[in-house]
Length: 272
Image (tube, rainbow, N blue to C red):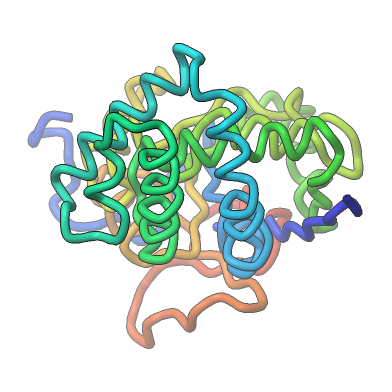
């Protein structure tokens, strides 16, 4: 199969929480940078035109090849639990079948519908991540970073600034993405990965959880870049510094907002 090239343009206690959302302002140099991927480090079309179709195309063969492994069986059980909750979705009733062929057929339909609806389920992202891992390892998928990402990350490392990823994609998928780029393995520029196991990206408590993991003295010592206004508001509510990213193909930002806007990662770590 011909190699598919991916172009990536990769923005507490109640007493400690700010009384209103932090929109920027002088907070001093950050101690950590946390980055979204889709619409911040990668174009929106990246997920829908390359990654989702690849996972959908490879899903049945992945299931058939790994059906008897303990890892996949655990994932199938989680999918079956989701199918019982969303029994009206296409393929849901087949997913719980005791017949292997029927169950695999149902999972292919059910997962396809979850992807079509862009569900952010952890089990869906985990399954996709395993399929993408094989694609990266075989060379069918290669990530080409947008020109501003690698230099910015390298500069932050040289300054002693730690950089993390927070994405709805699984941590394994994130690691694979940065491990197989046209510029080599860039995981050494990153200090860690967070996904929805830390909480929903639109929930302020998720950012509280991550701040605790990062060990900063104050949440304002974390700078977050995202293209999502809802994610920006959640992070700001948790006291983080926030910048909204504008990239080609992103949805227009709301006319009224007070967040800093950047067009390049090299603009991110500047005095707010």
